[in-house]
Image (cartoon, rainbow, N blue to C red; front, side, top):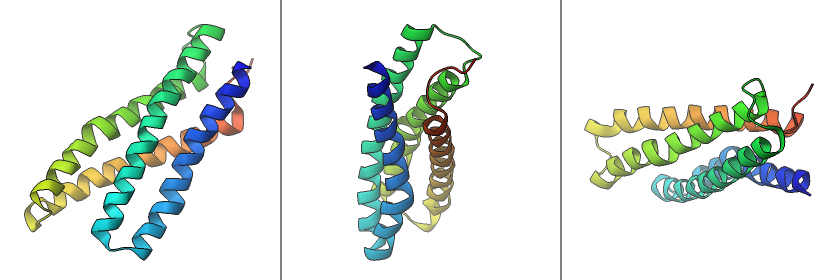
Length: 143
């Protein structure tokens, strides 16, 4: 039963990242005004971030309970790394970008917003690729 639950959690999280980040958000920016698309995209990324925090935490606990902590278990290390990246993106970068948007994106803070957005995009790319690797390989430790 746990394996099925783990697969479902991982699929919802990673599938959500891919669907939102690489399908929905580009369509939003094609069809809507930039500020509206940005606000909707931000909400979607927030939702998938919370799904990621929950899923990663549950999956890490499940693996540690079943298999113990093994620093050579790459799937466990990948999940821990993905959780850290989600936390950085949602609770460090996102508030910084929201603060810049709240005062208004001007020539003065446009470069800073772009830098933060670029970092967040790279973290998201790393997470989506790591998640894809986990979906392909599974969560069980290979001997």
